[in-house]
Amino acid sequence: MFLDLLLGATIVAAVPTNVERDASPIIAVSGRVPQTAGAAILNPFVSFSIEFSSFPDFAGNSSLPNKFSKSLLDNLGKLQGGKPHIRVGGNTQDLALYDPDLKTGIQGTYVPAVSEDYPSIISYGPSYFESYSTLPGVKFSHGFNMGKNGTAGMDNLIATVPLACKALKNGKLAYWEIGNEPDLFKTTRPNSVRPTSWTESDYVTEWLAKAQVIKRQLKKSCPEMATDAEYKYLAPSFAGTKNSLDPLKTWQSGLDTDHNVGLNSMHNYIGGADQPGVTLRHTLMNHTSTTHSVDQHAKLSQELNTQGLTKDIPYILGETNSLYHQGKPGLSNSFGAALWVVDFNLYCASQSIQRTHMHQGTDYRYASWQPVQTNKTTIGTKAPYYGNAMVAAMLKSNKESDDVQVVNLPLSEETEAAYAAYVNGHLARIAVVNLQEYNYTTSDSDSDSDSLSDSPSDSTQRPVAKYSFQIPATLAKSLSVQRLIANGSDAITGITWDGWSYNYELQGGKPVRQSNVTIGESLSVSKKGMIEIEVPYSSGAMINL
Image (cartoon, rainbow, N blue to C red; front, top):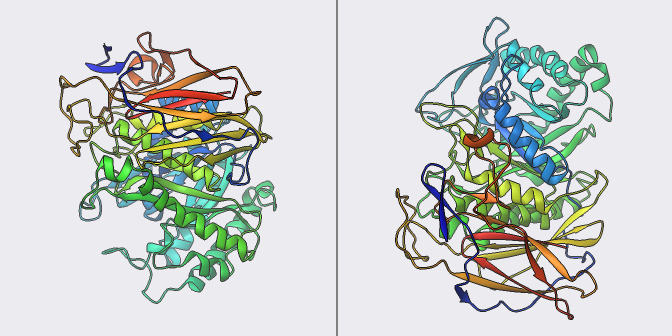
């Protein structure tokens, strides 16, 4: 049954019973955390990276804070037990120069030859730092410009440290960061900022020197933030594991010589917006594609640990999202991308990647929300945000000291994924994501089409897959179910998590329960601990113990 909701979009009002596939082979789920689980995640796990030039749009300023962003972050904080951390950085971090006389927070000029999505000539003034005061309870990482070299670069660094530290006093600081994706500094054309001879050792020498400059400035302006406990960095912030600087050689060259790297931060994108052959079915809604992308980080993390280079330094993705170059319309902003968000983030957690910062920017196609109205994009909550919500709920902790671990539960098809979450060693939740593409604008659930039309087709009833799990029979007799659902993988509106809409048009991003969505489902557990759940194609479900 389908009912109209908001702007002509539709949402599923009840779970269909058109079972397309019989129950999967029984998946045994341990009641106690197995050795195959990932390391305990950091709290919060669900976090964001916001483009340096877009940060004032997302946060607002002291006179006009962005209440929409605040509501969306508050929602996730309640779902996961801690508000997301925000890393302020990205490509424009290394393009922005401080201007003490600038009357506005930021001023940017777009150069289409460089990018049509963000300004590449950027000045920012003292009021830029007001944006750090608008989101109560959120911790931030501030990115310093490393790309600008010479006297101008050093003057810029020295001038901004006092402003940044004063803005981030009183518990707002998470980490500092020096440079964004320096492993691309000598290869990005036409704007390479280092010579081709620049090596891992050269990078480390420069990074250590600039970190020492920052610490000296902190001692002058904010001495309480220069202590060993408070003074930590995200590093090396490389774009990937196989670019012009090798992360393993970088750590071997002494990146943590001064013992000030707090998190081993790397970046990852599943593919490129302009790469040939990128589709929902084969790129985003594809568990194999996701595992291949994440496994390179898991392998690097294991090698670093084996060599004793990152002892007690958690591995995170400090910037990540679906398709680099800010995403692709019809893919990165679709419900299929929300399902990818769930699969990708939970797989990361299962592979000991302990936090992810999903990258955001004004007018970016893969953004979880558009913070302001522009001539390109309507303000509003986007599909990926609902994936963030399910991940947050799956990884919920009741107190900061809780250990939350995730196990990947392998399934037979690359169009499905399942995970178990353990809290303090005990099974707490099971998530299932069906990635079989079901486009509500076409009648063929196997279609490779990534186009969107204005109205749904007269398609047959939505197929459903059954999943069977066996848990210890003593754990529970009845389990509750929450669902991530929309009309199909190509939907860009009408999405709910557990019946909640976070649409801007309703209450500015605050949760609003939709009366035409089934909630309060329960599953019975057999005497042998068997449970079965039906999951419509292109949807997700979470079972709560």
